[in-house]
Image 1 (tube, rainbow, N blue to C red):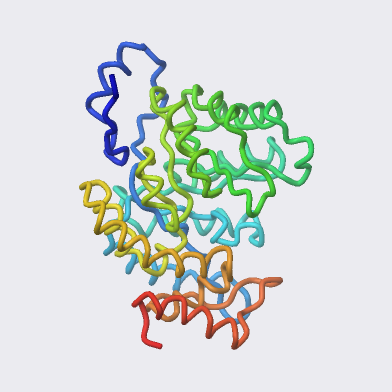
Image 2: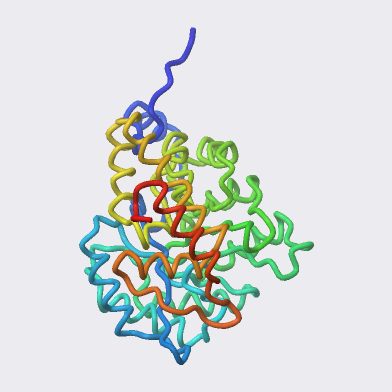
Length: 328
């Protein structure tokens, strides 16, 4: 008998719930619903290279008018690798002060060592984070085996007072968090999900298939494959493009959740090139310039990141204009 295919973007399918309960899987320590769209917010700097907290506040007030589930703070788009420990914590504190409590604040706390990550995680929680996003350590990537990574994330989750979301971003770290490691870590009561930025939908679907009965959730790490992520069971996305086209990314979420697949496909197609432009093509300098064009404060990056040259700016603008988001 053929088994019917159900729209995988439907959250917690009702037909699966009785089976999940019957398996008596351990419940998560923190019952935190992370489903939804999050912009991984940028860190605004002034011309002197200092964090501009007034501009941060202005951006957040505009973002709070968009139906985001919350905000990812001090992720890759926040240039966290270039910030001091004190700056990382202060940015999180300022965001928590500004946004309503119903908006989740997920703070990046990853460091290279397990000890430093634990310490940063504790401080992020104290600064107001509802959950932490922990990136794979990668400096000694040749020794970052599944065993080493499971040990690292387990120690962090054991010590964290807030839920932990795993973060796999191979474009930056040079390694994927292996599927078998994710499946093992999903059993931990304080590890509630994964942000996967790799874009391999087969891998994302397999992880969801192997972990969903544990209450583990997956967030697509880019707007470029958001629809595809929903189609295999992802519950939302952490999307750089949401810093620029936040309402449109949230509209794509709404279309998927309402099974309006034709409309969702059309919108997804129009977001692919702009998304690529502010991620793998031009990165944070491209993202910040696009934010300036759309009424937010992007401003300069922190050195050694440099601004785009004139040719790159033209191409960046074309990527938005050709898809109807800007005038040429």
